[in-house]
Amino acid sequence: MCLDRESKSNVREFCIMRRLVGRNSFVCLRVICSACKPRLAASFTSFNPATAHEEGILQNPPGRMRHMWRHFSTSEGQLPISQDLLKIMERKMVAIEGRYAYLNQLLAQPAAAPDELMRFGKELSRLEDSIRCIAALREKRKEMEGLKNLVDDAAEDDEMRQMAADDLQMASREETEGLQHILSLMLPSDDADTRGCILEVRAGTGGEEASLFAMDVFRMYERFAQKNSWNFEILDITESEMRGYKEASASITGDGVYGKLKFESGVHRVQRVPVTEKSGRVHTSAASVAVLPQADEVDVNLRNEDIRLDTYRSGGAGGQHANTTSSAVRITHLPTGIVIAIQDERSQHQNKAKALKILRAKLYERERSRQAAMRSELRQEQIGSGDRSERIRTYNYPQGRVTDHRVGITQHSIENIMQGEGLDHFIDALISKQEEEALASLKVVG
Image (tube, rainbow, N blue to C red; front, side, top):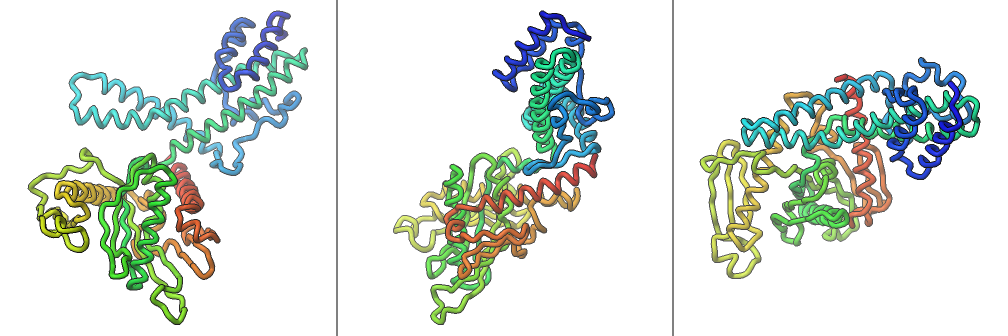
């Protein structure tokens, strides 16, 4: 079909406008195509580049269109999207849209119970990002279909055809980016990733040197939290004779804290000359790190009859007030036998609040572990086996290196890492590994 002079002018105007407005050009395309020809206005159907070969679009593409269809390439930083995976994604997108509509209907019912409304609201909130991305993808595909028709209908106008082809190439790249983002949202994820966390660091084998290393590790995470603008609140510290940390715990809150720090759980090994070593021999010591997602009161139901509260006088430094009043708190959860003792604050009320926060986190993690074990080994809560005796990272001071044994990455900047810098290199690699495993599970489930 050939375009008349008025339609050609409109299409040229659209191509210029698209270069000006970029990704927001779909509205312009709809208006212009409606003004041009009814065929173009009716052509806004879903267009899938994965079937481009079958439709003959790639047989003799005009101009630079020969290079525009990058068939879901696996460039750096992107997950591969095969034909089979694309079909799985299409089915999941329809399912997500259906679930989103169903939840909105449930929330509109006046007879819904408050706890159900809260649960539905949380699920609806988790789906909102996916819904927005799916809607944007569908709009992008409509735009691509319109541009494809412009290329076909502009056979006699090389300039207009080339401009439309360039815009189609740009839209194709944007569609691929949208698919990548939707895929990342579809990958099996941990609902706790957006939460804050409870960090626990304990000295392992190595005596006083282990407690000094535990202090270094604890402070490393404190500096890392500060660099990420997270809130780092010390909950409790038990010091050794040399002022190292036998045990230390902290509450870290911020956007996506647990999703990043959950990979730090495990045994951290250090190789260095201890300050107590006179002959200069290198010793090996260790500290264990546990990262637990913080739990809300709605996540863990703590009944008063399940808790025993004991108070006692604080020990160690703290002044006359801390040592003569019963400000220290010990909470025992009777059904599980978990005991939490806090004496860090001068106020009994503050110590109790901190102890309850740690107890909720431990109970929440206990339930998560139970559910994960029942589902499958594929959905582990952390990279690796989760066994606290597993060595995950080695800090070698004589060689100035830090090696993460799970992904085989070594950083030769140990001083920077202990200052909270460079941990992202390890964390990003572990997240990538998790995404690869999640992608494999998505293919299996689909």
